[in-house]
Length: 541
Image: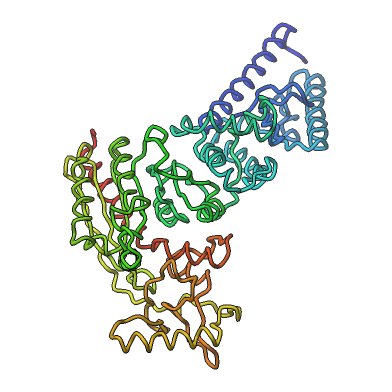
């Protein structure tokens, strides 16, 4: 027997609707807190879903347990008043929900339904399921490139640098530095005004189908100057840092960087104004070493060319680092260069660099470290670390990593099967042997380097593409061979998932100019350790 009046029943039904709205608000607020964008009560499709991710064609419904018949087989028997009315009403809702599901699914939509009790009990689980579904349907970075017909041509790269930096920094503090120009570029690429949906699309998360995607929930931010192919970036992303700006002038290096990180570095740092660079925690830079390297100095002297700071093309690029440090005041910096920087021009070059950084009010530390403690390669480089005295008040406790004592053998990174094209020709092998004999007679050390498989190699240089003479691999019954590009990558500590999209010649140049990734990561750990230690001791700052 029905004990409710029509007015009471109507009041109860309105309360059920209000309860549904309450759980919908709870889910909506949770999604917003995660940074998702969506439409509510979407009217254009069957069922008018409570939440719709239109770009991904995902429809979300928040269903009241009673109203939509949760566990209906047992729940139906618990209704004791006006059974026929409620059975008909709720079973009609169940059928309607099934029909909505069928229509939406047939039209390519994914339907997610969440019971009221589930939302109230575990809202995070519901949001995680939505996030997982979105990730399954996400457009990939490569899809965006294909849709926009993006070609990595020289005259395109600076424009695309804005676009890729914008995608990497959406909804972050650095977004403002790239948004306006990126939207203008998108308009040009689409040859039309951006629709509201297209603008929203640029804020939707998508899959970074690249080997080294951006870090979520970063612990700190950094910029990557003279970025090369991204050795610094791999190391500091491994430490949970987020790169918010990168710069590299070499075209082919920028191509390699994009293939691995989904970001095109900006070009010539001398043309980039300080106010175009976001605020950041750490500045990283392996500024050009040719003006200071032993080989570079010797060659330029023989040609009557300037070297060091007198080399106006590359030697003065340190001062671009200095002007950016002065303007942006990062908490910390890490710079890298060749060992000879310290002794160049009888130490005067390094003195200028060291004093310049100290005058910017930074505590400065430097040390020459050999990479052979981390990879099977003898590679001495000088590292310069700075801490902002305005932040640390000279209280940081920093020290460089000590050698780990582990011995690394070149045989550990060699490929099992190598193409014959890497074997030296008879002519080249004879030339190298004669060249070595000639210089030995003159009393100097020029010659080829035939490696011992159980030892570390000589230093890999950017000239390796010419003849590979500094590191040659002996072969039984054959002339020796060069390292392959993949072996060069391993020699510098790059993971095997690192993509090499360029020719062998370019790859040799790039890895010869690169940093030893695991060594950079170890130094980075010590920098972050000093920073975290300072924060623990000064919680109010």
